[in-house]
Structure formats: C-alpha cells, structure tokens
Length: 270
Image (tube, rainbow, N blue to C red):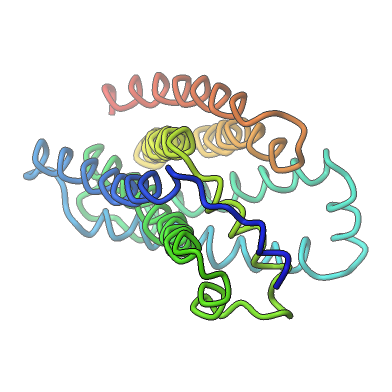
C-alpha cells in the first residue's frame, strides 16, 4: 500500500518505546510497593482491587457506553457534540468527572465498608490509576513498539501482513503507524510525566471522596467532580487542537498540586 511506503521509523523510536513500556509497568508497581511496604498493617489488597474494578466499570464500561451513544453513533446529539468544541470538551470532562468520582463514592460508601482507612483510600487510588496504565495505555505502547520494530526492518509488505493491515483497514491504521514512527525520547518523557500526574490525581481525588464518605459530608463528592473536570479541561482542548501539548502538562501540574494540597490536609485530619 503506497500510503505506507514513505513511513520512516526514527532511530530513537524503538529504544524510546521500549523504555516507555518498561516505565509504564514500573509506575503502578512502584507506587504499590512503596505504599504497601510503608503501610502493610493498615492496608488490604482488596482495596487495590476495588480501585481497579472501579476504574474499569466507570471509565471502560459506563463511560464508553455513553460515548458510543453520544459521540460514535450518528444522531442529533453526536452531531452537535462533535461539531462544537465547547460542547465536546464540556461533555468529555463532565462524563469523566461524574462517572469516575461517583464510582469511587459508591464503592467506598456501599461496598468497601470493612477496613475503611485513609491508608486504604490511597491504595484504592493506586489501583484506579494503575489499572488505567496497565489496561489502557500499556497495550497501546506495546502496539506502537511492535509497529516500530516491524517497519524498522524495511519490508513494508511483511510488516503490513504481520499487523493484519489491509486496504480496507489502512486508513484507520495509518495514524498508529505514524505515531510509532515519530515516537522519540521527548514523547517518552511526556508520557511518563503525564502518567505520574494522573496517578497522583487519582490518589488525591480518592482521598477527597473518602473523607466525604467517612465524615458524612456530601460537599466533597461535587468538589472531587469539579476538580476532576478542571484537571481534564486542557486535555480535552488538546484533543480538539485548541492548545499545544506542553500546556496540557503545565495545566495538569497546577491542578495535581491543588488536589494534593487539599487531599493532604484532609488525609492528616481523617
């Protein structure tokens, strides 16, 4: 297929992708080992599992189902959202904030009634953020690595055959091939930084929701939703090409700091 003939894999694509895959695995593992070693007596693995399940149900089942109805399917709602940047961003950050934070609230209030401690709340956040890396981002990075390795061998036809790319699927596959070809150490740094911010954000938001649950203060759930929405605003704008990538990381750093300051104060008083 001629569309792939001009694809050139950068010299740093394969090694940078290998490093990215390793670090994507290391981030959740290190967070877990550090917290578990520090608070072994106060934490239960069931809270880590609950966090992982909470993410899968809220973000990968419910959120994707709603996205299919409101974004993917062709209907008046999807046409309005996809055709309006403000509506697209507002819809995206609202779905993420409401579903994920309500998911945390429901699980911690109604399901995880035993061993409801602040240490376990942090472990829940590690499970939530960790499974996002391992189940969503890591597979994508492994796919990019496979693409980069196959195309770097110089035989385009063999690479396309190995990846099961046909004339019918070429248009859909092209962005992934281009992304793998252009991947470099700067992208490694950006992806790792983004994941570290996301892990800290999930931990902080979990502590905020946890504090509201154990103290019976309803205001902390909408607070967590609002903070989540604010943190996701620039990523949503970036998806629409409104802001450059570097501003996304700067914006994330600000809101992660805000969330951690709030969560830290609540954690110390819980």
